[in-house]
Length: 247
Image 1 (cartoon, rainbow, N blue to C red):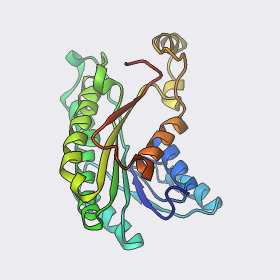
Image 2 (cartoon, rainbow, N blue to C red):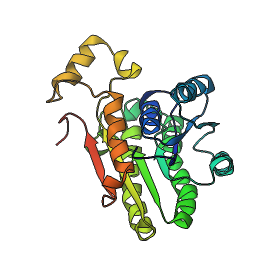
Image 3 (cartoon, rainbow, N blue to C red):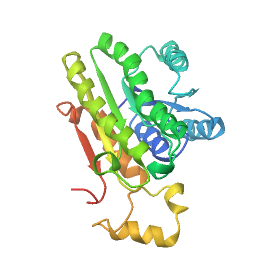
């Protein structure tokens, strides 16, 4: 098992990509902390499924944009396990609209969850990793963070900001054997994409050279590689997984 007994905190892991990452890491022996801001039922279902397979973990409900809640959650994880080996900053939301129609509140909310949340978790958890002289931090960016997207000025800006934050953190933490990388997914087969009108889905698929959406497990497999010893010499990178949508 590549991650045996490694403690991994995955934000936004009650469902979607975060859930797939928690599940995949648990298959490799990790102890996942399942976190979400509101969907406690789904978070506990995710943990129950892991425990049914013989794994173990913890559910921690908190808002990644609130520094007091972040501090509390990290303290709870440390009290339970005494260490945090891997951090996956995955929590995210969308508030899409054209810029001329986008409210300041919707811009600020996407900023707080994505960019500020990634900053707060990285700041707190990196202190623990520095003392351990070991850590893996994986930040979830997006293909639109490198190519932009109409109607997603807020989301694209924050995902681009996460790439800059990733590179800066990688330089600051490398001396303590901590790697920091970003994953930039394209269109992933989730309930959100399934709900799109058929004409919109066809237009998206036509722009993807491989002609399909990615499955959440494919993103989880990339995260697993970045968290493993095989990726020990990879840091400060933003790795795309988008079927050729952006080259």
